[in-house]
Image (tube, rainbow, N blue to C red; front, top):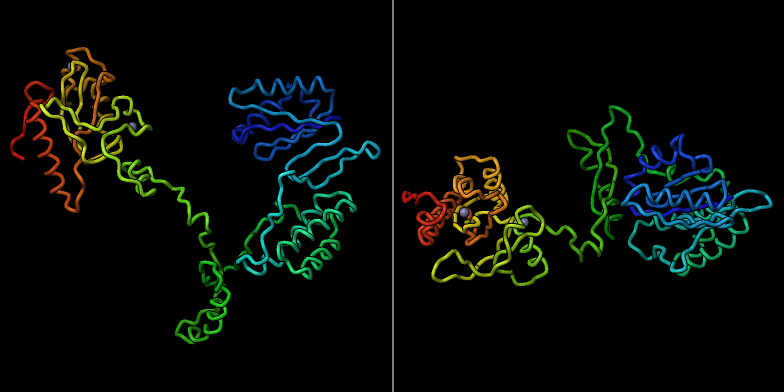
Length: 415
Ligand SMILES: [Zn+2]
Ligand SMILES: [Zn+2]
């Protein structure tokens, strides 16, 4: 008997049905008769193979040919295999499989320190849980005892009182291995609350004085209980506070608005200026990075602000391949407006601007180039913003003469 463990990228997760139901367990699969067991945990598969090495390798090759995006790595051994935190050893005499805990060569003593701010009950019970896990993972008593000695030393060196460690080991030794619950059995299931009972829960963020807060709340609760609507003493629950990692790192970098500005602000860098593609939308390919605004005026000017495909409240300049200029404005994200223009050109919507010219000159919707010549900062007054935007649009049309030589139809002087 050979055992094989195949490792696939996490994509395997998505393909679990694909493999388990369609391919491997398919009745017509010629390899099916050799598979005694197929167990998967995320991207690790434990496979017990009943057959010769050549067939196993053929199966491995077949597995790798199933999907272009899934690559399997095969580790196989007739006597010993490592799977997650287990060493599985085959004993030829008894013809059974023995289990031992597996330790990676890079493993360090990283148990929770006893001085940690975690609740005391958690710290006091951690050694017992660890011993139970060892016991579940070792099918041989001697193996368990030697592993338990190492664990005891590790626990003591992480600050656990030896009294607690000894007591936990004793408790674990008294436990029958067959009765130890598996992690799934140990999953937390809240006790069902009987109908009609109203339980008040006092929730606070856990910190070093939480226990004292609970004591104070319970001690003085009788004052509230004397109120007109008496309430039973609340059940106290804690939510986790922010840890150091969360305090130091912000992993929710916003993609809203001008994404690049948000990132630079978060890192305390100076704000960038100019116009750039956002790098993540369909409009990017029709624009490019610029620091200067050149819409055919005698003197180009430098961008005062930063804009990209996600900017809103902007003036946009669009060129066809002639190139003729069109000046427009939008209060929404510029990429939305650009996509609307392209869609109108594609569907030959003659009521939309530029479309007539694009049809006449046989341009396609991909023949357009765009950029943001001006971004109007948003204020609290929406109607003023709207007016400023329209005035700026008209000013640029007038200056660039795009109503005469470009694609704008006329100037609305009434704004
Ligand atoms: Zn973009
Ligand atoms: Zn044109």
